[in-house]
Length: 170
Image (cartoon, rainbow, N blue to C red; front, side, top):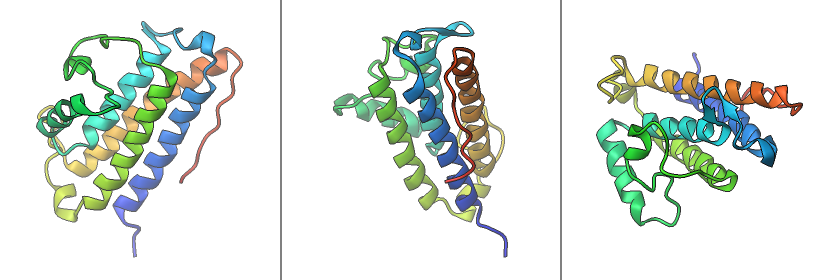
């Protein structure tokens, strides 16, 4: 019997998030603002987590509602609402501790989202008008985006002598 898609995606997402968290934790304080391409290290982390969060949502409308609801929460990774994603740069600099909290929020969301997925929802549309494929493929797309930016961050850390480790599965 084949392994359940949700189990495989959960395991690989957890591993990819662990690799991103290594980058967050191992980035020297003096490198937190270093450029990765044209964006600071922290901004690449923030962008990555925002889209993990977004694409775990059932739709862009639902993600927008989530962002609006966070305005009243103690920890709000989008203090300027959807403009944080729509504008090229966030409204402010985010700290390492905030990015750790956001990574945990994404981990928690991953668990609840995948637990609620059914064969029907996975076979259905991604929920995002610009992603013309199934929800299942949307999860893989999200995972590729997460790992792409984690690779950028990891490579930048290695160039300054900081090692990161590959995580096989969790």
